[in-house]
Length: 278
Length: 278
Image (cartoon, rainbow over all chains, first blue to last red; front, top):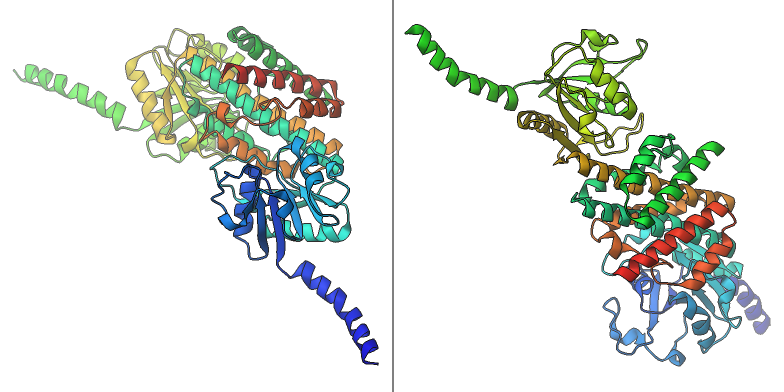
């Protein structure tokens, strides 16, 4: 009788305990890696009262992480303690290997890459992705609250836990699957890497002509802000957009660098094709 | 004796009067045009206590300018009253014609274009350029204080007057000659028009893959902010920068649009060439 009472009670209590564990308890997280993303995540979690960093695994024993206490750093992957989530924040091509090297099974392991599929993680653990879509720079602090976190998980319960952890550090959490994330990553190359290259060419042209690049800074800022209120198509201006062939010809004549000329022609053509489609 | 005293006095007073006229008095400005730049300039001058807008010339008699009183608008170029500066803010290819049509000589006439040389203005008046380097959008107010004004004048005294007017509305005034302005204008096409096109392609990729473009907004903002503390070369990241050929190949395989593929290849190549040169 006592035993069956206990069993009934336990069967009630267990889901409640699991519920508390998932939705109210402290979440134990281990970070694997010591690069920019790892450091920024450690910084963000250290400020929270919901996520506890159990350990940080670094490959090189001499790595110093100012973000966390020395006692929590390990360089021996076999000594990883139990945690609710293991976040692999290493370079893309090292993710599969590191996830296969983990000395445990049936735990929840996520990576932080925009371009690596969920399935790249080893099958021996539950898989997930925790991709902060931002450009991280060493020594430049970022406000994680503003950084979109794109998350994905193999199982529903894992997703809920991951979402909880994500909401602790960011106000912008999105469910993004592997196919969507690949698209986002390519789009990010255009709006970030290629945009920065446009700045770089602008800077080169200024330097060659003894013009201070800072004159262009307000324009760069306004270009980025404009698309919060207008779509990029609506925001498009310039000689290509208005088919101003004499200005385009003058600019091409001005550019002496073959590479810059090529880029100018191709992007002008591309803008003009877009206009035709409108 | 009285007459010579008067002459001596006048010869002292005249330069002082000129000085006051130029450096302390109200500056009378007439605006020729009714486009975005004209409207933003009218708005900015109307708030100042140093610049008085004498008249605004509009081609179309039905043009309504909410920025200024009806009595100051004229559509008859022959009725232009006397002013210290005439600012021609019309489309690039109309500047030469409008400046030739002005019904007076030996006054100070400037245009507001980044790509038109000083010499495009008619020889019958003093020439100058008053180029606000910003992207203006109808109905979107801008803070003129932050907009760089690139100014040029044929004569020193005109330059000083133009500089004074520029400083009334902006904190960022630069002496930029025609050759430098041409370079700036080309650089602006890269950092503004082409950057916006990168946003546009990013938006297209998001739409095709059911991903909200807003996820990319913080990245776009950070990309623009980063180059205030780092040079664009230092700020460059991404697969091209780190020569990550497998990600580059995956991105090219992902892109189905021929034009997007072409742009991806050319810009990747250009970033890689830059890296080699470092």
